[in-house]
Length: 268
Ligand SMILES: NC(=O)c1ccc[n+]([C@@H]2O[C@H](COP(=O)([O-])OP(=O)(O)OC[C@H]3O[C@@H](n4cnc5c(N)ncnc54)[C@H](OP(=O)(O)O)[C@@H]3O)[C@@H](O)[C@H]2O)c1
Image 1 (tube, rainbow, N blue to C red):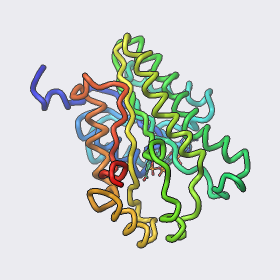
Image 2 (image 1 turned 90 degrees about the horizontal axis):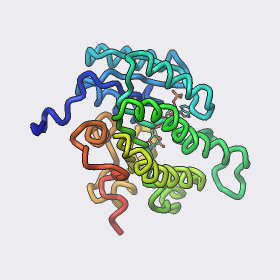
Image 3 (image 1 turned 135 degrees about the vertical axis):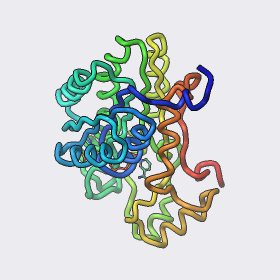
Image 4 (image 1 turned 180 degrees about the vertical axis):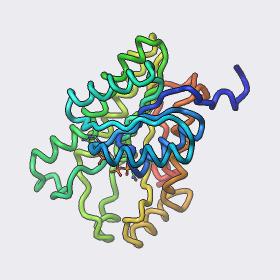
């Protein structure tokens, strides 16, 4: 197989995308579906997962399965993986997308409640690791799989707090950066552990995407310090990276962290 169209095809593959009811997870799920993959969408609320699944089915005519899961609970993760596997008896792709900010409490480390720190690490590091464990087992048994862990540039560089402060964006939790750096380390080590079983493990580190909820001044300041002069576009800029790492087009890539940030992290 050498035709690049063939390398990118995902027909007949089953992909799980966690936390994909909307935003970046939804974008990646629809990207995989556009190339023919059947998709399992998870959310903590089944109705939200079902709504997103219905939208993708209408747009792409692939098979969809909606499942409820809170990935900070091992029992729910195991249950999700078993149901996803029972659906078509294989799981080929896992995008560990669920995560992000957990709650709107004080973010400054020195005022932040310890339980919020623990919750953040559970949501952004332990949950994705649980999903790698529960789903990775099926991939190892079948001898093929692609795992993509969604990290963040916050796991690579410190944040410019002056930019956040002057635009009233509040403080940025240190524990989020710690968890996302953990995802990048976990990805590298897991790639080595799983390569003898034909399972590829990579990460994507997005930069700031404009979800329409950022103050205008922040969008301008952030764009000014980004090589491409803009924030990431929803519905567009994450999809290519996800389909590349999910498909056979990336069959000589493992343990990699693909930075999708418009050049934010390389410009000083
Ligand atoms: N947006 C950005 O600019 C940006 C930049 C860098 C990295 N990222 C990362 O990219 C990923 C997606 O970002 P996003 O902005 O699209 O995030 P988002 O809108 O906050 O969506 C993330 C989803 O994760 C799910 N989730 C949260 N806690 C969970 C838990 N305990 N168990 C299961 N699911 C849980 C939620 O789904 P339900 O509420 O439906 O359960 C939520 O919709 C996140 O990992 C984020 O850290 C985003």
